[in-house]
Amino acid sequence: MRSALRLKLRLFSGAILLFAGIIIIQLYFLQLVHGQEYSLKAERQYANTSQSIYDRGSIYFTRKDGTLLSAATLGTGFRLAIDPKRLKDADAAYAAITAITPIDEQEFQAAAAKTNDPYEVIKTQVPEEAGKAISELELTGVLVERERWRNYPAGDKAAQTIGFVAYDNDNTLAGRFGLERYYNDVLDRGKDGLFGNFFAELFSNIDEAVADGRNAQAGDVITTIEPVVEEKLMQILADVQAQYGSTETSGIIMDPKTGEIIALGTYPTFNPNTFGEEDANHFGNPLVERRYEFGSIVKALTVASGLDAGVITPESTYNDTGTITLNGKTFSNYDGKARGVVPVQQILSQSLNVGAAHIAGRLGHEKFRHYLEELGLGTETGIDLPSEIPGNIDNILNSPRDIEYATASYGQGIAQTPIGMIRALGSLANGGQIVTPHLARAIRLESGITKELSWGQSERVFSSSAVEETTTMLVEVVDKSLANGTLSIPEISVAAKTGTAQIAGPGGKYAPGKYLHSFFGYFPAYAPKFVILLYTKEPGGVQYASETLTHPFMDLTHFLINYYTIPPDRGETL
Image 1 (cartoon, rainbow, N blue to C red):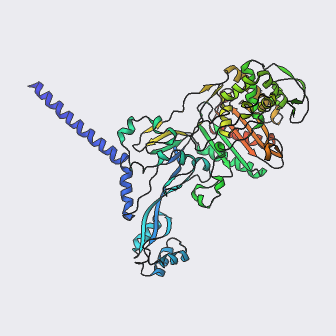
Image 2 (tube, rainbow, N blue to C red; image 1 turned 45 degrees about the horizontal axis):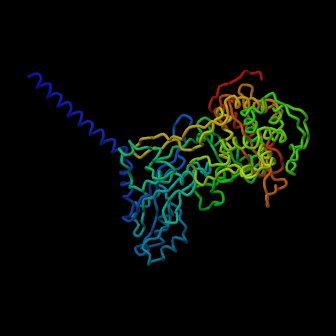
């Protein structure tokens, strides 16, 4: 008797639990999975029967505390249109509308005169309150329709990276540049209907789903870009651009251990909210689409290669003759002066071309070429941005001459994209390993599930000991040579190097008086949180990068130390 009662109680309890589970699942789908669907249905109360409501996933910046901030989202409001056949009093309609939201009278009257056309758009992106107020007037022949449009709250910040949405050749709205294009299949919520299958999302392999931005499930893209850091970087780049009248000024801040891009940007830039009024020459992203000869910042990699191969040690010396002729070509130190017998430290401290060429000679062609290839200087990085091009080291791949290897050792004759350059230099801040730079941290699917992205394993190029020795040398550059040591930070070690490169002109010859200035560094030097690359092209009135980019780099360094509360890594005394 008791066993039968227990069985009934268990069955009753099970039924209650099952019923509760069904209710919870229904609420989940109602509020999260289909919440936006019902929102869209409400919006369609203002839409005509032939009108579809534009829908697209968002792109987010990520604050240092993990909260999200919209970088690309949907603005919501109304579109105003008229049916000239039904419009009884054009003047009265114009007066009523413009009292609420301004419209061009000439354009309105021209549209009203097209009595053979039943539908003429007179204004788009009308704010919520204004659209509803016009709708409540119930003007005959005036149509108030729900509209959504792409909105970029950050304006021109990281514009080339975010991209924008525009009509393609098939008259379909699609991402045209940046992340909008690369992750178009993720962001496009219209390709498989408005909503995906919850269980398919739950058990899917996200790595396959977002490969190359193709064949992906719909959702939002959560980036690694920190909005406050992005704002600071863009302000510093704008100041450099304005001060020196450069043709281009750009920068990247990366976590060297993970490859996450914390901030990046370039000037000139544009506002994607008004891209139709902007200069289309600025839509592309030079950080992945253009190559540059970066000059002396490459010497840090040359020194690390020599230390790793054992052809030099930190105590090694060499005879600096100031000028060398190889294969009938002559090159010199920046000032043409000989230093005599000096330590290899001076290759970095005084930025000596002859010293870098000395290391390349000790390495030999095959070994030096091996290091550059392992650093990925002749390949694409695999960053999640469209139109990336590979670096170019053809000079040393196609020539047996010593001169090409000598010039490559100090960053001339080989050209890299900025993202390729920071990936290679980032190995010095990551124990000798290169990583894949990337911008997307996760995809938030329409079900509300967030799936982290994987960006592969790091690849070792240098030994940890060679990197530590190189870092010590680069720290000495900052502590003693950069601005005569006046900018050294007593509490935190900083490793850095400047670069000044000639720019190739017509016919492959270097253009006189035209330079690319670059600056890279990382800190805290022996446990880096950030690696930074800055460059400015053709600055006016100055010759060396130490003049243009030293203070911008140090300003960024101090800002990041304070913003992220980075603790000291050394005592007050240097």
